[in-house]
Each structure stands twice: as C-alpha cells, then as structure tokens.
Figure 1 (tube, rainbow, N blue to C red):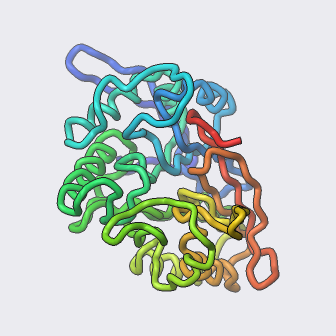
Figure 2 (figure 1 turned 180 degrees about the vertical axis):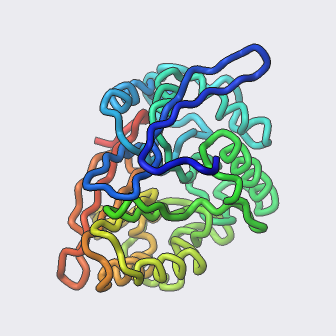
Length: 330
C-alpha cells in the first residue's frame, strides 16, 4: 500500500462477495520516536497449546509484532497431551502448505493479534521442514526437497504480511531493515535459507544434533547467513546508526555449553554450530557506528536474557522469547 502517512493509525477490512471481514487496525512507523513497544513471538505448535497468549499481546497494544519463526509446524512430535490435532499428513505440496496456513488462521487469538498491529515476520525451519539448512534436507533428496521448500515459501508469502517485492529470481528475500523513526534501526535476518549444513550432519543432508564444540570450531567455512546476506549486514552495520541497533533473528545467539560425561558439547542447529559466522557478526556489532545493540531471538522454547561479549567486553544484550505454544524443555 502506497501513500500512507507516518505515525498514524489506520483501519481496514476486506470484502469477498457478500462477506465482510472484521476491521483491523495498525499504526505506521513514525519519523521521530522516543519510545517504541515490540512484541516478540515464535514457535506456535497447533497441537501442543492454544494461542491464548495473543490475548495478552492484544491487550498490551504493541506498536509492532515481531515473529521470528516457526509460525506453523509441519509435523507432529513429542510425547504428552495434545489440545487439538492436525487433520492431515505432513505438508509437501503447495495445496498442503496452503491448508496448514489456513488452519492456523482459524485460531481466534491469532486472528485478533493480526488485526491489532503491524507484523514483521521471517520463517525458521518448521515453516518448511525441521532442521533444514539452505538447500539441504534431513529427509529427502535435494530435488524433491527444493520443490517442497518452494511450495512452503509460496504458501508463506500468500498467508503472511510480506511484500511480493521480496520475490527474487532465486527465491524469496526474507531479510531486510526498517527504521523506527530516529530511535532504532531493526535488521530482520534469515538464518535458515542460506545456511550451510550443521556440523555432524550426514553428507549431503541437514540435521541438528549434540556434537563436541571442537567439531564446530573446525568448520570455519560454515555459514549461517550466506555470503550475500553477511556482506549486506556488514555494510549496513558500518553505516551511522540511530541510538539503538536491533538484530532480530531465529535462534539462540549466545554460547550454550552442554556438559556431558564426554566433555563440553553444543547443539549444532544454533549459532554454536557456526562459530566463525557468529564471530563475523560480533566484529560488525563491535564497530564504531553502533551505540547500543540488542539481539532478539526465538526457537529454543525458553526465556533468556544474555550478555553478549566480544574480546572480553560487553557489546550487546540478547533477549530470547520462549515458545508461544509448544512443548518446552525443563
């Protein structure tokens, strides 16, 4: 939509035949701001829980809803009581993924959250397939997986508030930036579409696993963002920044040591599996242009507030949101 004025409330609705939608509302981004309220959400499994947390989100009236992945889940998993069930098998075709998104959109709390504020969203893995990495699947051969991924991306574009200008010859560009007036610049990253396979994954496949930290550190050429996105981010972070620089991305950025009898281990699907890629982001965040840095993350089904250190100095804070509705670890 073109020609909207900044910092203004708008209302909208849709007509289809003789059916009229509810009225939605949103406020456009401001030119100047001394405060701004962001709601951070991730990981909503249809079967594992109701989406009633969105009722509180609507009540708190944020300026922006930031969804950093696992908006839908492609499969059932885990033990424990389910509150509702997927009606069909795991999605593979375009029709399958459209049906999964349409099912999610029947949830009244999710509907209300979309109707209450601007959303900014980028997918993680479950919008396509668990633990996929770039063009690599854990389950299928490359050609079949690329067809599945294309179907999933198309359905995501059709059902989420993402501009069709994000379509590129090679797929969909989910990463980008928005200025929150003169207060903050928010960079939304894509840590899934361009990444290398995780350390310890079988040849030609992707798989998250518990592996020795040393195994990840031996893999210096492994990328989390892909060369083009990393170059874009480095160039952006070298430019003059407003008082706050925000990186919104999919999974835990800070190191997480998993102590096992055989020594220190890591979960390979997080940034711990890509230490050289994380170091590149740390170098960029440690630049002279950055005044205050904040990293917003999801994926790990638990809440975290982390001090991000580089060369022994604090350079950023990280806030990780828990799952909105999915089984969580102890």
